[in-house]
Image (tube, rainbow, N blue to C red):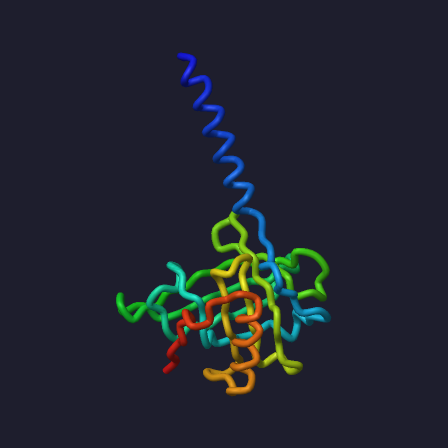
Length: 179
C-alpha cells in the first residue's frame, strides 16, 4: 500500500463515521421549545397532515396520515401513509419514535431508516390533543397536524405565528389535500 492510500483510507473511514454519528443525533431548532407536560397516550392515534415543508420523502403526496401506536417495547410505532398523485399509488413508511429525555416533554426522535434518527418535536398542541405543531431538528421540517381533515383558522394562525417567530418560512408550506 502506498503512502497516499495509507492516509486516504483512514481519513475516509473517519469522515464516514463522523457523518454516521451526526445523522444519529436528533435535536430541536434554536428558539423552539417542546411541549411540557406532554401526554403520549393522548397523542397516540390517527392524525391528518394539514401542512408541511416539503421534502423528498413526501414529495407529491396528498391524503397524508400518521398513525401512532404503542409498541410492546414501550416505544411508539409510526405509520405514515399518503397518496402519490403523480405516480398514482399509495405510499407507506413505518418507523419508530422514542423520547429523547423525559417522557412528559414532547421532544422525541424518529427513525424510518435505522440507525438514522431525526428530531420530532411537538412544540404546540391544543389542550384536547386535536391539533399539533411539530418540527424536526432544523428549520427544514415542519408539520401541522389535526385529528380532522382541517384545522380551525384561529389554530392555523397560532401555529403559523409560532413557526414564523422561530424562523420557519411559512410561505413555503405545502397545504395537503384530503379527499
